[in-house]
Image 1: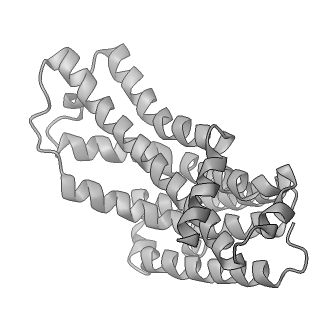
Image 2: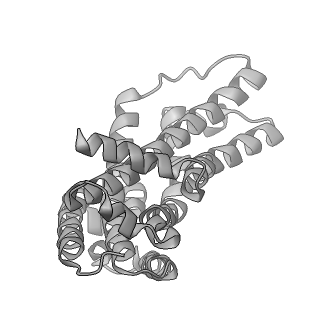
Length: 255
C-alpha cells in the first residue's frame, strides 16, 4: 500500500511536466510525419506492394525511423527530467522527511519512469495504426486487405521495450548520482552518438546497451547470431539497477 501511494504521488508530479509533454509529442511525432506524407502524396499502405503484409512493412518503416535515434534520446531526456525533479525543486529533503522507506521512494520513481515509457509506446502505436487507417479510408475507401499481425505486433513491441530497460536504468543511475541536469543528458548523448557510429562497423557494438534498439530493427547478422541482445538487456538492467540502489541507499547526503 505504501508503494502504491508513493507511485501515485510521484505520478502526480509528472502531470503537465516537460517529461509528460515529451512522452506525448515524441510518441506521435514519427507516425504524424508518415501520416502527413501519405496525405500529401495521396498514398496508402498499398504503396508497399505485394512483398508482404503491408501492416508489417509499415510497422518496421515507422519503428526504424524512431528506434535508431529519437527513442533512445527521448529515454535519456525523460529519465533525466523525472529523476532530477527533486534536485531542480530542492525537495529531496522534504521527500525523505515523509514516512517512506528509501527503497519505496527508489522503486516508486523508477516505476513511474517505466509507466511513462509504456505511455510513450501507447501513443506511438496508436499513431502508427491511425497513420495506416486514415489514408486508406480517405483514398481507398477501405482498410488494407492484409490481416493485422497482432502476435507479431505485440512481440515486436515487447522486444523494443526490453531494449529500453538498460538505457532507462543507466540514465536513472547517472541522474541520481549527479545534481547537474546536463551531466546525464551529456553522457547519454555521447554514448548514443558513439554507439550509432560503431553499429554495423564493429563486431562488438553489442557491448553498448544503446545499440539494442537499432540492432533489433536493423538485424545485423554478424552480431545477432553471436549474442542474444535481449538477455544482455536484462543483465545490464539488473546490474545498473543494483548499482543505483546501493549508491542511493549508502549516499550520506541524498539531495
